[in-house]
Image: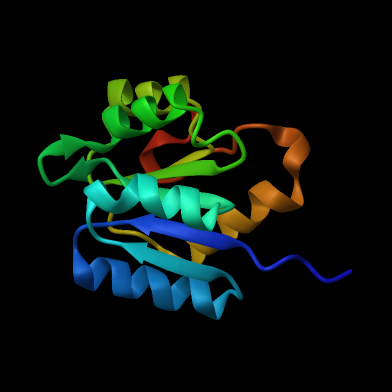
Length: 141
């Protein structure tokens, strides 16, 4: 049975990083949607209804964890799986991501094939609920 093409909204302010993520997701037959500005995220979520939201924890002028907490409160993410990416994998950051319902937390520098595999795994095995984190933070989510 053929898998549905997943749409992945990527909130990454670094253009080079978002381009690399876009290439990797496309190579794995996903539909990446790039959003470089946090101020545009709500509109993108409402218009596109993505399957996955990939968010950098460090955004210009705000914290990605705080932003996702706000969107959860506004019920904008009720059918969207959220993955965080960060160069900081302190236990308290990863635990906070888990607390707000993240499906995954990946540590930079990203292994782009692993990123794609982790996203696909969450949809291939939905009975697992929250997916496992990678790299340093494996036990947190």
